[in-house]
Image (cartoon, rainbow over all chains, first blue to last red; front, side):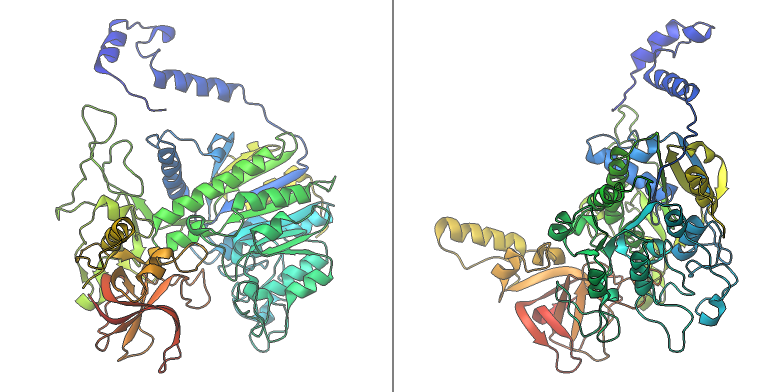
Length: 496
Length: 143
């Protein structure tokens, strides 16, 4: 809804000013009424202390408060509004906290450490999965005695079905934090010579499916399940040792296998599913063809897992929000961001607040920044446009920097978009920029510090929640606390 | 003669409408790399129609595979490599191999360029590097 205030309306309200609360001159102002409505809703809030039969954790990788802001504005602008007023599905959830995401040894975290924090209840080092901070990354011998149980394992022990869904490779850090124990997140398809204390991550997934710990696994990363001598359905070869075929092994265990949008549509709800829709990561939403969307995968997963009367646990990751941020390509960040919110809406639609705890969060933020005094409705992926003194909407005139050139609202602090050039002894001049160029799908936002890939940042992310015990999310929390709320809500008792 | 999408479209319209005109004028609007591909990774109708024509494409020069080379790979965005996303550098799906008239003078992979050459389709293996290309510009200039 676009809201515009006129000088005459303000004058009229001022003329009727009175001292009492109900007669404040601004009492009929739309903003005032909206504030009162929110207050009433907060006063009417009731806490839900039911047992959570189901728990769904949706993580948009790299979707900190800033990145989420960009998606909110883009979604609103796509709907024909200014963007700021838009409410993403999870932003209507009743409970929220800020999350400190650092790893034990890293001020700026990585997704393996953050995933392990949320899935196992303890912070650990960057780059390791399902192990505590006593391990040394890449030191296979250090894993012994340092395993931690994952939420998928714990929920399985409690009699629930579990699943993992991601647009990244299923062997990638966040999804793997649900089922894998590895001293290095990179051991996706193979192990270094002499490493005999653990299995590679893809093997651990199929082992977990065989053991009944994972019932539905949907995502990318097919290459990590087949040998170098094996060609997949889309003509690409694998990464495993020659002759190894974990997909065939899964099929022999009675697990349904899907590799594209048609085969996943044919999957039934009476058997586990392994869906591997790309050789590597699944496509960005903006480029998606022949693959299910994240929301479609969530629908398949929930409908399959709902067959268990004891309930289910599902971890969902929008993995490519992070990748587009790394590329400095906000156009794809926000489109995958919307795909994530569609998945949130799907999870909400298919479940009941009475018995399902839904948690929406990110694992970390990125080095993204928003600057300039942009007027309302300025395209969040495009140029800063000036504030109008006479209308609510921006002026349509680009804001100019001291170099006389326009600039985008969103920029990155580092990355491949750096204006500093190696061939100019790392000096630089900002290229000129048009709105058409800035809003192009393939545009890389300008950045400062030159790096091959834009980086994460350590700043807080938000966690949004609804359903049983969602009110336990409050204040500023450590990231590993997410696990403890999920476990408490499900009233799981574990011996280890 | 530079043959861009804008003028190809004009030429196509003329040929469809009037059954004439193989003549097009030069233009300054380069093709975007993604316009040469369909979403499923196959060549676009535009790419098929422009085969054998001299076209201009915008993009970025990926770091060359070999010094003193006479070809480079054009990418639609800077070839950023994320150590946390990937265990090794990988080519994106949509690339264009550019065989140049002269030995390649490297331009940083973060600097946007335009390159002009004759569009070729079909598999070709570079004899010096073994690099397999499916779509190329031949006799290209760039900058």
